Image (cartoon, rainbow, N blue to C red; front, side, top):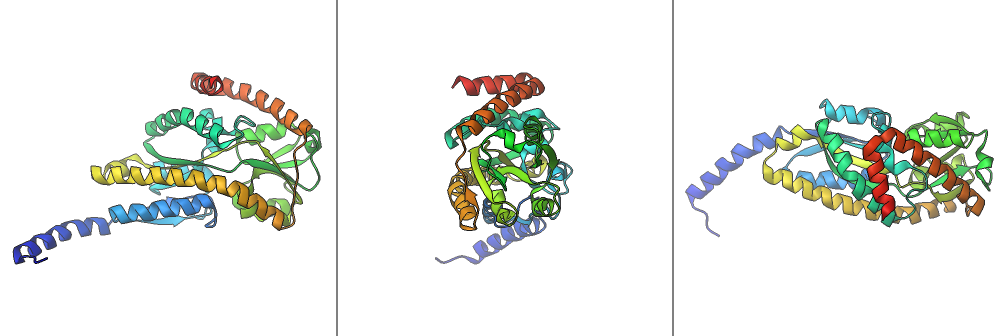
Length: 323
């Protein structure tokens, strides 16, 4: 291909007009999970694709190193960071609707998790939009299980224990089964067990691997429990300041990240549970009595949640149960 001198000058002028603007843009992203966590890896891949299509580089702050989980959403709203990833149910005190995915035993399969998220997502997006935020994508955690040092044949076994909690729902679950709830962020779990602040928890195999649960617990009992969601979002005015084509490209990259993240979650459910077993933990089979007790507690928590979540909560839950 032969370029004319005039063409070269025009191309150079165009690059000169774009490059300084791109060079001045550097976003910050905050997430609460370690680098090896599949949520964090998925976010990194998304941001790398954003950089490729927009030229905008993003510095990631993982494992709560810049902002702890409870402060990430506010950090994006105020512009301290441009993007954030949160466990949305951890913000239940702000809006009970954010807890819908953490109602115990409501979701026990990936298909059910997809159905619930499809129904809940418009409500979540509307709430974020009112706060100047744009939801980019959402990805679930693997199913949760109980981490203990003794078998759990029934919920009665948990009475009197000190349970690590991470949102309003797990706090309520602990109370209903007679345990003492203590809110502990993911990065602080090993220390909380080591110092006796907590001695049991219910969470995913991913969190168990992240915190090396084999160092402080002997048994993992997979019970389904929940498929809680991580929500990845950004400041709306930051997104809307970009050219329309770049906005569209970022949304397309987010859609890819969501598909990829759901697949990573399903893969993690099997692989990470196996890793817990390979490190010496016993993978127990839940008893019918334990599952029946969980269903009863789940129904109680669901009714309590509807009372707090209001009309939107009732409509979403009724639509889910209606099939």
